[in-house]
Length: 366
Image (cartoon, rainbow, N blue to C red; front, side):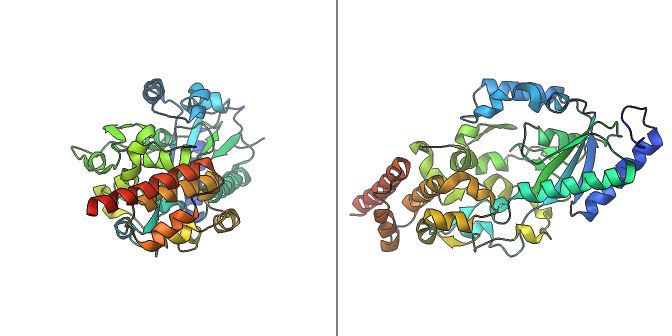
């Protein structure tokens, strides 16, 4: 019988030893922190229900389809009693300063989390190793590993596990390291001792609300995904509403503005993970060069990257918008003209919009 056999009453001292072992093992696997919480998310469930009722999930229909599994871990994985939440820093060393790239309209800005290897792969493998080490040490028990791969309220669980508080921009913030980190979870049927939940330290600060280019943070702790650049450039299929295109600027995959202005990120740590280093110079690439990628090149350059999930068509759509917002140089206009007859209706429509922006500027400059 397993030392931690959930069918038997687990001795408190053994549960404490298991929790301590998990935290030490997590550190050895490259996680910066690990905490443990219960599965009670009653208040967060009410917030989720209101958010869905307001339609703020946009076209992410899966949010609605999953119902309350997201806020009830034991509905997602029957028998779950505790959740281990782990944090891994991702701010890549050597990446060009984000503000400098955002300030150069000829470059494509990619959210810092997506510059290297797909975090889903990295965290899931490490969490699986952690679960296996726990099994080797204490015997078999029930568990499932998640990394943004199922209906999980990961930020609420991480807050309850003491890893940080949910800021006004809806991201998790730790007072010692800021917010540039990934989260992953192990749902388990073991009754482990819980950590103390984090308290909120946003105070009266509203920098993230002010900095959001599309005013997606409609109120403190309330984000309307339909206005969010991350949603528009990654989750949304088809046409990006014209009202947001100018505000998107040169952001071609995601947006970090709310994190860039957060004062707690002065404590952010550079990641030691080589997997998160920028690939193919994506931290500072020319929009013209990126727009020239055919589908084969896109698939090759984004192999093992989170960027690949949007596909070549959305990639070109996003870059077309950025080129429409870029200065009217000949190379930019030539790049757009070469895509006027793209096979994709979506790409052609956004290219036409971009060319029209340059035409309007030329007329206004006369």
